[in-house]
Length: 382
Length: 244
Image (cartoon, rainbow over the protein chains, first blue to last red):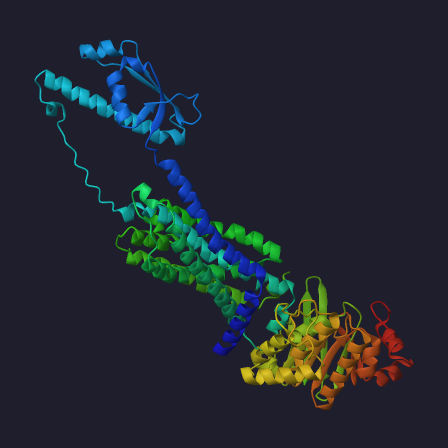
C-alpha cells in the first residue's frame, strides 16, 4: 500500500528533522566542505603563482653584468638575505671565475645553479630561472652564429607549433574533478546519521518490534526508510552544490589562467546523476546498519564500508584506470560529470550502464533488507 | 479471539515453547502467568508474528499469523515489552502515526487519537515531546497506540512493569472496560495481585509448557490453596521468579 509508505516516510522525515545530530551532520558537511575547499584553493593559488619579483642569491655577479641585467629585466634580482623585508629564495646562482673569458672566446661559459629541487615552494622559481637562462643562452647562440655569417635557423631544423586545445574551462576541470568527488561524498555523508538512527537506533530504542507488529509489510517499512535517507542525501547534495556555487566565485581562479564555475546546468546534471547514487547509498547504509547490533557498531561498520565508493570516486577524480572505471558505479557517473565540466561529450553508454548498475545494487540491497527483517536475528540484534 | 495450538520453539539450547495450547476468548481477560524465563514473552511474540514457531500455529480471529500476517495483525493491538517511544514525537503524533498504519485515514486517525488520549487522561501531555516522560506517562502513550484503532484483540506484555499505584489503576480500569466492550484481552505477568484481580482465565506457564488453565478460583480449588500465590507455587513447584 502506497499510503503506508507515505505515512512512514512522513514520520521518518519529521522525526529526522527534529534530530539535531542528523541535521547538523548534513549541514556541517554541506556548508563546511565547500568553504574548506575554497580556502584550500586560495592557499594553493597563492603558493603556485610566482610573484613578479624573484629574489635569489647571485654570487660573483660582477663577472656577468649582461646576464645579470637581462635577469633583472625579467624580474629576477639579487637579494641580500640579511634584509628581512625581502623574500629571498634559497636559490644560488654562481658565475665561474672564467665566465667572462669563456664568453669572449665563443666557448661555453659555466654558471652553477644551487637549489633544492624537491622543495615544492622553490620549484616554480627554479624553473623560471632556468627558463630565463636558457632564453638568454639561445639568444647569445643566435648572435654568435650571425656574427659568423650563419643563419641561426640552420640549427633549428624543426619548428614546433603547439596548438593547445585546452580551453580555460577544461583546464579548470582538474579542480572541478576533485570538487565533484566532495559532492558525491556529500550524498553518502548527509544521510548516514539518519540511516543508522532509523535502523540500529530504532532497534536500540525498542521501537522496531512494535513497528513490525503492525499490519505493514517489511517491504514497505524498508522502502519508507530508504526513501527517507535518500531525501536527506539529496538535500545534502543540493545544499553542497549551492554553497559551492556561491563560494567558488570568491576564489581568484584567473591567476591560474582558467575559470572554474558551477553552472546551473551542472547542478541539474549533478542532481540527476546523483539520484541513483543517493538511493544506493541509502540502501547500503541501511543494510549495513541493520546488521550491526548497536548504533556505535553501525557507525564503525559504515566507516569501513564507505571506503569502497570513496576509493572509486577518488580514482575517477585523479584519472586512475579510466577505461575500467568508466563502467563501474560511482566512478562511471563521476567520469561522465567530469567530461561535462571539461566541455566534452558525455559518454552516454557508460553513464547509463553505471547508473543502471547502481540502481540494481540498490534494489538488491533493499530486497535483502526486506528478507532480513523477517529474521529474528536482525530484529533483535542477536 | 486468540488461539494457540501446539506451539513449539527452540531458541539455541533452550526449548522456549513446548507444545503450548490455549484459547483466549472475546469478552474475557486472560492472563499468562509464570515465573521469569517461562516463555511468556516468547509465546506472545509468536502470537503477534515477530517470531516463527518451529511447530504449531497461532491464530488471531481465525487467521493464521504465520500464513497471513498482515490480515492477522489488523485485529491486533500490542503493548510490547520492552516498548519504545519515538522521543522526538509527541504522544498525539505517536498514536496517530500507528493509527494510520492500522488503516485509519488521516482524519479518522486524528479523531481516534484525541478520543483515546482523553480516555487515558493524557490531554495535558498530549503535545509534549515524549523525551523526558515518566514511566507512567510512557506506559499510557504505548497503551494508547495499542487501543486507538479499536482492535478486537489486545495483547499486553508485562504492562505494569515499573508503574505506580495510580497508573496501575488506570490500566486496570481500561482493561475492564475493554472486556466489557467485548474485546479479547491477553496479558502476561508475573505479578500475582494483578492477575488475581483482573483475570477471568489464568494460564499458568513454566519452562515453555502450560501447567494449568482456569479461573483464579478454579486454580485455588484445584490445588486446595487459599490464595492464587500459593496455588501457583504448588503448580509450578518452586517459588523462584514470582513477585507478590
